Image 1 (cartoon, one colour):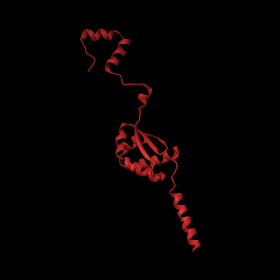
Image 2 (tube, helix red, strand yellow; image 1 turned 60 degrees about the horizontal axis):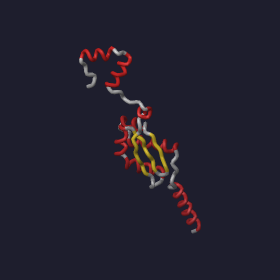
Image 3 (cartoon, one colour; image 1 turned 135 degrees about the vertical axis):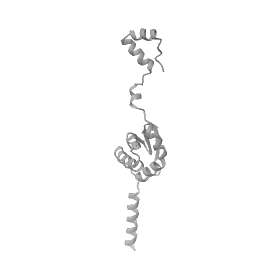
Image 4 (cartoon, helix red, strand yellow; image 1 turned 180 degrees about the vertical axis):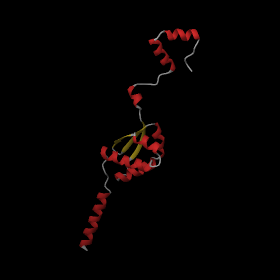
Length: 143
């Protein structure tokens, strides 16, 4: 009887250790992200490459996925699967998955796409004869 009690106690301890919450770190979050992307986007290569460009951050039990426009909508539609995966992977029911739009590299650098007016003005600074030609021909450079 004593042996059965100790065996049962050892089994309970082993089960508790196996189901103990796993701490989220940069390394294990990165590897778990690779795994979940393989699962949810295995047949969708377009989304897969866009999703892999996403950045993940975590604070306590909140995992925030910073995704570009292509991946954003797809990931939002897969939120339940992501939640289930992360909760099971980290043995933690308190985990929440949030989404944020990823700021593009162009916006971070302060660059923007130039309008036709800006392009013309830049070219006219280099060659003032362009303004004269535009005026004489009555051209409108804006579409």
